[in-house]
Image (cartoon, rainbow, N blue to C red; front, side, top):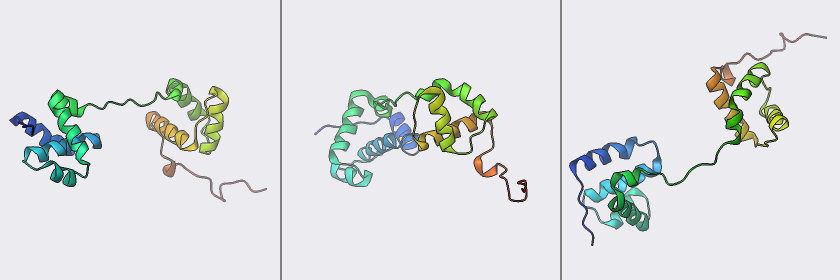
Length: 152
């Protein structure tokens, strides 16, 4: 059986970051370390942290291999967003020609860039654009009413 010793600095960092680290998977690993520092068995740690016993062993192995730096590391990278390269031009385009719907924006994006995205991805992209441009969110935009529409 391996023996784990935690320095006072490590325990302070684990105590704080198990609730305040931005990534939930890292929080879970830090919770495993905290429970181990309290002298619990691997079975109890797995039950309390809601992970498998193998995950407990992996987290402890990572700590032995590289300390807290290794625990905080996120080994995967996300995909590169192909629309990010067009961010500035789309911001200008959609400010001048605001789309009425996500489908309209999807069509405009596909027509001009050849990149086809789902409606959920287009909505997320538009939300990022509106946050960057300082535009009002959708619920606060003025919407036409029956009285404001011209009658024929």
